[in-house]
Image 1 (tube, rainbow, N blue to C red):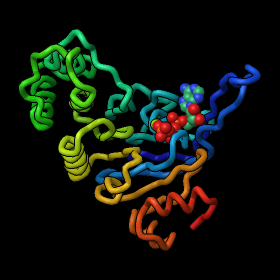
Image 2: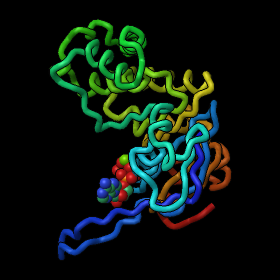
Image 3: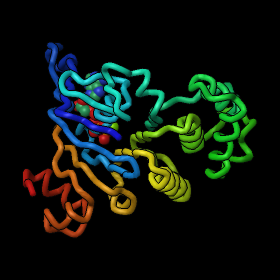
Image 4: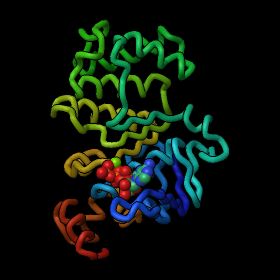
Length: 251
Ligand SMILES: Nc1ncnc2c1ncn2[C@@H]1O[C@H](COP(=O)(O)OP(=O)(O)OP(=O)(O)O)[C@@H](O)[C@H]1O
Ligand SMILES: [Mg+2]
């Protein structure tokens, strides 16, 4: 279970022109929850606040205001406990280039308190499903970005996480692998895990998400099953919901 209550997060950056500190309100009072056995899709344009929200849920960053609970634990009070329950994956995760997947899986298993052979078995099983079974002992430095992404996914799931947080999981993947990842997310949902993904890929949302939240300017607009959102905005696709919100319309 994931629960956000009135979460705020701001960053201070230097203004490019006058070099003065400038405040960016990345997340402005977001509340929603995701239940076990549910896939929640977080949508929004570039810079809307999706990754910031997901990083806070993963307890990699704390909210300035408000609270986040994951599996009954507060991310502020028990960040380590929260991190132990979840898998976090984003597109900018790097893998150690000089190692092989087998070595990386064992190492990460150890970090996550999983017995190395179990970690290797689980990880290689996932690699196999992604069509990478033959690459277990090949050094990562020659891998394509999609192959590295597949290894990152396998590496993130070694400790049997109850909560799965994927920031744009299919970016950089070919359609076949993207489908495998989506099927995997569905399986994890059906196993009773809590799944949250951010994405720009609307058909994916309509296909796999049970509920959708649309972020615009750090605020949540619409938090409902995709079909309900379409009805509320009286449109045929989620793209059109997006355009309406961009034009300042509310449901
Ligand atoms: N570490 C940071 N330091 C300064 N500003 C940040 C930081 N992280 C995010 N921001 C700013 O916060 C805002 C929200 O960024 P965020 O990465 O959450 O957006 P996003 O919805 O994930 O966008 P995208 O679709 O491009 O990935 C942006 O204006 C971004 O520049
Ligand atoms: Mg992002």
